[in-house]
Image: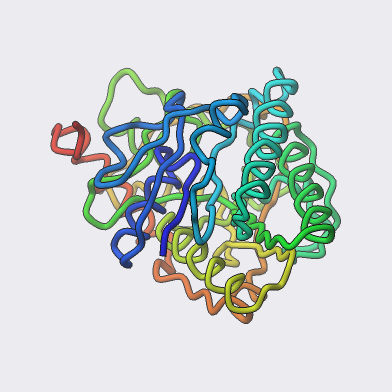
Length: 331
């Protein structure tokens, strides 16, 4: 089976590439490497193009045959989306529309879309199911919701299948320690905590301690990046075997952890206290985001292997130590 993976050189995308290869799939990566890393993808064909360049995209995909497309390519910084919303609507929505247009031209009918819990905004229930009201509070979430709406309409009008996977907080690293988070700038909590333990140049700051949680910090649901990769492959098989048109699934552990609880768990993994300071809230951050993933378990057969926060952090810590030692796989 042959897969096209736009955004395959990014954090989640590169883990998807590795997972697919480990399970016998042929992979073609499509990426402009604006934020992804060439060292993170190996042993596969690479198409170097930005999805906004429709002419080049059309040339590269003309006549190509893929069993499915797993689409990660997107801008994903919430704070940046508040400051530069036009960048997010152009890149995330128009870029995806360009990709879908080329899929339709070439009779490629199965798409897994990397969506986000940010489409829900501030939750009105303890755990978020797929039919929870969708009221994004930042342009990043809004751009992803616009894509979902577009995909639903295309599935209703064409012989086309789309599955939207709404991640909660992706975290962790490949079990080999050869792949992990390497963003610039890094905005995710766990890698920033771990970096602060080994660098005098990284000062850990918590954004807000006045949220309506037990300790005043944001609560999030963390899911291991390899478990996300598993869900994407299951989605490809789900679409090819059932032809369901449009589908949507929330992916998380179902457990919420506050920033302070994550900090404490990181301290346990690294074996020492971790100093921090408290800053103001970041714009666009809801107080709670916790998934209900029962539908993914029932329909996809999705069963996360990394069930504890400590196991997720431990994998990230192994990656971080290898990076510091200079032994991560880079070419």
